[in-house]
Image (cartoon, rainbow, N blue to C red):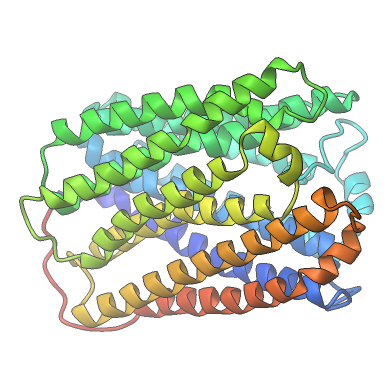
Length: 459
């Protein structure tokens, strides 16, 4: 059954895809700046391009998560959203705040932006991923709390399911851990200690609960497998996720001055982190193999299966490659870290948001699925983006291995910049793969405009 208030998810999905395109454009700019140092300088310096690239990633995924929640929760709770007007109002506030922040990065020197936005009152700027000015951070908190109020009130008046509860736990965790972005101790060790409470406990903790809930929801819809079976899998996955993810924060504490025992705690529990991702892959394929019906939206099924596989490879395998302290001693902060980050974010979060958009958007437009022609195009976009991301990861891994050898293992270690010159071939190949990824994203957008025979909505 479809609920009228689910329609508020559509602007969130559209904004998410628009910001995603912006993120990839700035990623391509950064890729060129790696090999052509003065490309677009001084208009867009590398540090600004990097801030915009990473901040757009976070913001568009948040738009995707919020849109997914607005779509899922009414259906899971079997009741209309508590306040669709509040949801739409928050959309415009969040979009305006995000746009103004990005414009600030691009057109105002960062030090001047800090002075203009009250950083002297409460210093929170200047840290990677948390560069947002104070008003933006406060705005994010207000929007998140109002959003959570809306979702929580909807759930309280309707049916409670394991999927919606896991989703809510993840969303509340997202908001709570963001509060540590306001903690900025003068001591650098303490600063990094709490900084990871935002960055790590988002992407390797509470975001994984959101991922599990979104994937479980789509799999119920496209396979017809009993909810009880899927929910049991979900409980197992999130338990392993929380145990390994929370204690696994220690793998970021190896070299920041924290006590030595974190090398053991971080290594052991981080080594276990691939297990929930492997379980997620088995879960997705198992549910599709046991399906009781053939859902007309084949593209959404492909995205769901791809999410499990790529999340396991990116977050699990590539995370494990350099998570043990004796290995991380050499690889820390090299292109191997970048390789892991790119595939992990794509596999775990980008793909699941695209999966939910792929499933929900046709229904919001009055059909069960896009036409066969549109779905073929969307599947092409899946393969273009996924294969491109595999190559990006492989090229960055090769660059990282060579970088480690030249800078940190060799008997005659090179300086950082000399080593960068030696790995520039891999950067050029990474840029080519990035262009391929961008083409895939454009094809994904085009697929929604391809007309065909509409089908009636069936739930």
